[in-house]
Structure formats: structure tokens, C-alpha cells
Image 1 (cartoon, rainbow, N blue to C red):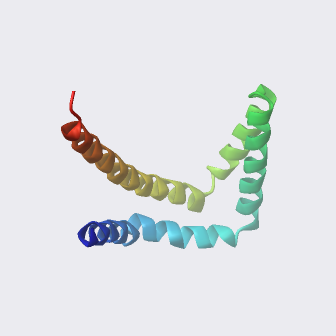
Image 2: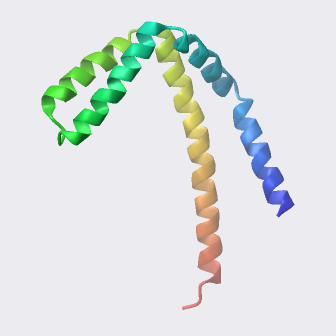
Length: 112
């Protein structure tokens, strides 16, 4: 069991030490200091909740699209989201690999 924990820690460290993850951390700090970005992100979160609660009102969707478009014009935000996507792909790969492994493991042990 210690080997499994050690291997998982190694995988986590690999992701955390990746240039994309490090860039996300750096850019997230920069964005936290940018009041315009923070305000837009908070407005988007609020509108997303309203959008779901409203049953997907098209008027709210249009407002969301405008705010998201504004964020997507800010280079630091765009670079952050690109790097975050890469980090999430790495995490998804690890998750999917573990799921596949356990699926195969349980299929072997299943007797029909």
C-alpha cells in the first residue's frame, strides 16, 4: 500500500511541477490583483447560478456570453485558461487510467 501512496504522490508532484501548473499558479496570483478580472469572474459565477435556476433563460445566456467575451480579450486570462486546460487534461488522463485499471481488475475478479 505504501508503494501505491508513493506512486500517487509522485504523479501529483509531476503535475504540480509541470510548467503549465506553475504558470497557472503565477497567473492566478496576477489575476487576483486585477479588480476588473475579479469583478467579471464574480459576475459570471452569479449569472451562471441564475442561468441554471431560471431554467436556462436565453436572456441570461446572452449576458453571460458578453461577460465571457470580455474576459477572453484579456491576455493573462487567456493564457491562464490555456494552461489550466493542459493541467486538467493531465489530471483527466491519470483519472481515466486509474478507472481503466480498476475496471480491468474488477472484471478479472468477477465470476459469472
